[in-house]
Length: 265
Ligand code: KIV
Image 1 (cartoon, rainbow, N blue to C red):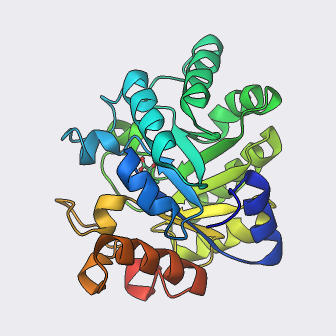
Image 2: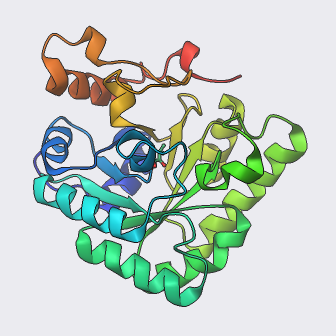
């Protein structure tokens, strides 16, 4: 990829109207493949609880799990920006937030991701003021699955959509460097992307966000469940796994992924 990707790289992409790709990885081998295939951001996601550990949600994932996988990914990374999830209940108090974010940064993260709406504004501010870039994850937030009641599209009705728009602004104002939108209608993701100055990464949020993110195992077609917004890039690859990851990164930047069958109107 040449020069290492930084937050500034992503902000510049947003300013120039260029797209970037983000993909999960959880170990050194895949971090090497992903970072040399044209993917700008590696997310060490708490999705590892489902895809690696076999849980039926992300709730059992611990800080120790996240630190271990982040350290593995850091060893294999060749220049992608490393973003790490703060797992369920690891940012419930200020002290916990600071200690846990610091542990993830020491393990190699360059940005942390937290799930929530306006209620994470103070946490976002706390971290941003101490030099830790924050990605705020909104829309479908898997750590709240028991309150949401299922992996459903969020923001379908006008009031809910307006709330997500308002809360996204609150988080940008609190110092979030990036917003991640999961499973929201295309029009809502477009409105938020246009309304905010920071880059917006989407998953199941249509083609208009600055970046796209996907879970590695979904891209490889080996996840037990395949949501609508997933594409198996390995099925079409003539160059195995590296070719599939390259095709994903290319498709995101050329705007051919996601296609209409991958988003919600
Ligand atoms: O944990 C994760 O991998 C995520 C992505 C699904 C965005 O949060």
